[in-house]
Image 1 (cartoon, rainbow, N blue to C red):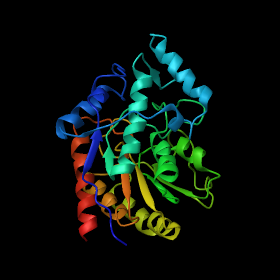
Image 2: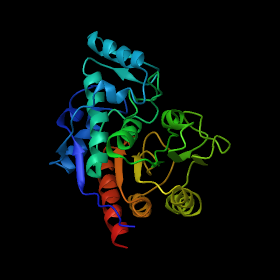
Image 3: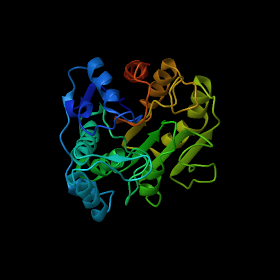
Image 4: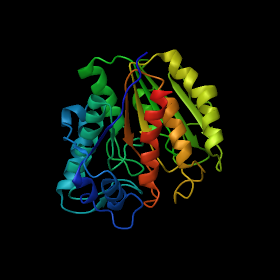
Length: 295
C-alpha cells in the first residue's frame, strides 16, 4: 500500500476573529496561536448547506442560521454559544474539513464538530465537520470505505450517532471515561463502532498500547479507502479540560501509527484548550505523519 503524504495545512483567518466566545474554553485564541505557528495555510472554502444536509437535518441547519442571524448571542445548549458570525464560521469549518479530504491535509478549525448530532448542537459543536467530510469523500471522491479515528479526550457521540447504522464507515474512539458526554462505554459498540474508554491519568504508553492491540487491527481489517482523524488535543498533559497525560511525543507516535493504516488520510482539529502547548502538539502530529510514512 502506498502511504499518504500530509503536508497541507488548511485554515482561514476568520477562525481567529469570528464566533467570539469571551472567556469560554473554545475561543478565538486557540486558532490565533495556530495561525501564528502555521502562517501560510491553504484558505478554506465554505461548505454548502447541501453538504451539511448529508449529516444534519435541514430544520436544524436553519435553526442555527436563524439564531446567528438574530444578532444576539445565544446558548444552543449549556456549553455551545451561537453569535452573529457563528453560522458562517461553522460553514467554513465544515468546508475546511472537506478540503482536507480533497487535499490530504490537516484542517485547523473552530468550532469543533464531533459532538454535534444530526438535529442539535452539543459540547461546543455546531456542525459535525469530520462527518460532513466523510460523506463528501464517499459521494464526491468515490472513497467508499471510510475509517474515522477520534483521539479527542471526549467521546465523539455525534459522529458515532451519524454512522451507527452505516457499515461503510468505521468509527474508532479512544477517550477518557467516565467523562463528558457519558457515552462511548465498552458495550457501546457494534461491528463498525469501536470504543476504547480509558481512565484519567493515561499517557503515551497507554495510548500506543491501545492503538497496537485494538485500533490498528480493527482499521486494518476494515481496509478503508481513507482515514479521517478527529485530532483533539485535550488528552494532552496540562490541558485545562482533560485528565490525561499524553505528550507531544505521544501525539507524534499516534500519527506515525495512523498514517500506515490507509492509502489516504486527512485530519480535522477538535478540542485542545491549552493555547501555550497547542501549536507544538499539532507540529508533533505533522512530524509523526511524515516519520510514519518513511518508516
